[in-house]
Each structure stands twice: as structure tokens, then as C-alpha cells.
Length: 351
Image 1 (tube, helix red, strand yellow):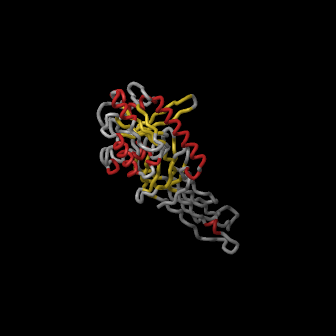
Image 2 (cartoon, rainbow, N blue to C red):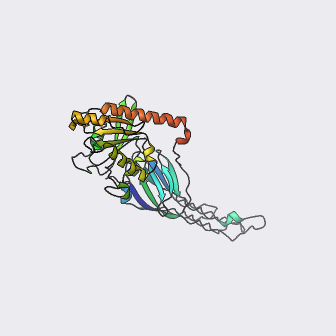
Image 3 (cartoon, rainbow, N blue to C red):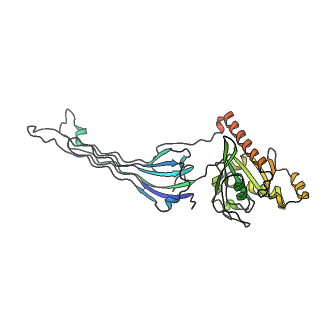
């Protein structure tokens, strides 16, 4: 089951208390203070793991509570620190404050860790307060309290190319033909109910990932159809491919409707490099093909007439995808300011 959002409660451990204790040995009547410090409470750590693909585990476990540190002991022995709790999430997971919606960290890179709740420090034993003028301190301090709060986890798939289109536009068929992905395919709307990823091998040593998301309809950004439930998964893509059926009454209007839905969800989405693929060409007659070739979707937008059933136009489309990705990489190298900023491994202050 594909789950791309979850809410969890986390609590770090409190530090152990420092203690008041005195050295007691034979022949040492005034051994002085030897109360040890308390141990540290356990941290709550979140790590990105490339082996994971869904947040399903958090449907069954939603509370993560670390242990407290142990109190100090005599002979200046420090209390044992509690073990940290490690929470593993898929790469591409965003961690948010569930109350304010503030994005705390974006975990994209495999192995990246972030402390979301730091355990409390242990208290000080009386030996820490001994001075030349106060050789028998009778004070110690308690351990710091742990921190607890609610987090929202949101998964955004990591893909190079995003396929968008109305329901039954042929996205699933296309991704099944150009990659090894095997999504459910049927001749009715909303066959695809979860995003699908497929690895496309262009040439030796050259490959890229394509994401197929469930179909959009007018008003999707307002929650119609499957709404915005899966639109987040194309926010990270570098290139967008719009799929429009060749039998559409108005190809340009369909394209504009899709672009407007993306813009209403995220104003930066339509700014991504764009390719248009007119699908199901196997059912188009010669007159319709000629009419489609005359349609212009905008400056710099390449158009491909394809049939995923017969394979017509697929090689050219895949080549165009690869070239768009390479062009995007070159533009990022030329302008470092265009690179997205992602914060990794930042200790977070509790809210």
C-alpha cells in the first residue's frame, strides 16, 4: 500500500538527576563529595533511507518515546545515558511542524540524519560544585526535561520526469512501454490511484526516472477528483510531460487547463521545462494527424505525436525527455542560484 503522509508524536528522554553523595572509605573520614552527574536522555533522530518507498509503517506506529537517562551514582560515576530512537523514512520525506505547518527539514539524500528532539542533559552531582572555599557542597541539579511535539511527514517522490494529464490519457500505458514499471491499465478513468515510478534506460550509462501520477481534472487544486493528494509528487521533477488525447475537442484548451491546475497548486510548476505528447495516435486518421501537427502549445514547447500501443513516436519522445534533462542540468551549472536549497542534518529546536 502506498502511503505518502503521516502524523507522529515524538518525545525525547529527560536527563538523569545529579546526586549528593560523600566518599566513605576506611581511614578517610572526610572524603569529600563524589556525587556523579546524571546520564543524558535519548534523542529522536530521523534518517532518510533509499530502500524505503512509503510511509506505511507510520500507520501502525505513531508514538516514539525515548527513555530517560539514569541518575548519577557515588564515586563520581555518571548515570547511564539512554539510547537514541532512530526513525527511518524514505528519501524525499519532508518533516513539518504538525501544528504550524512549518517545514523543518527536507530529507532528500540517502543517509541524511536530523535530530528532531534532543534528549535532556543530565543534572550535575555535588562533586561538580566543590571549590576551595566550599569543599562540602550539598547541592545537585536535576536533569533537563525531554521535549515532545507532533510531526507531520510528507513524502514527495524523487523523479526526473513528471507525467501529467487527464484521467485515461494514457500515462500508465506510456510508462509501462518506456520503462519496466507495471502499473494497472484499463479503459476507464482513474485507473491509477497511486503514483508509479519507472526507470527509463535511454542509452548505455544514461537513464532517468519517470513519475506517473493519477489523472487531473478541472478543479483538482480545490480537491475535485483525486484533488491535490498526489500533485506534490511532481514538485521535485525537473521536466513535465503533458499527455493529451488526440480525440480532444480542443488540444490547446486541455493543455491550458492542466497548466492552470498545476499553477494553482504551485506557481512554479508551469515554469519547468515542458513537453507535450499527443497520445493514442493509433486511432487517429490522416486528417486528424494533419490537424494536430498544426497546433502550437507555446514557445519552446516540443510536441510529439505518439501511440503507446504501437510504439509510434516513443523513441523520439524519450530522446526529447533526455535532452530536456541535459539542458536543465546545464542551466543549473551556469546559474548556481537556480539550485534548490535543501537543509540537511540541522539540529532542530523544539516548538
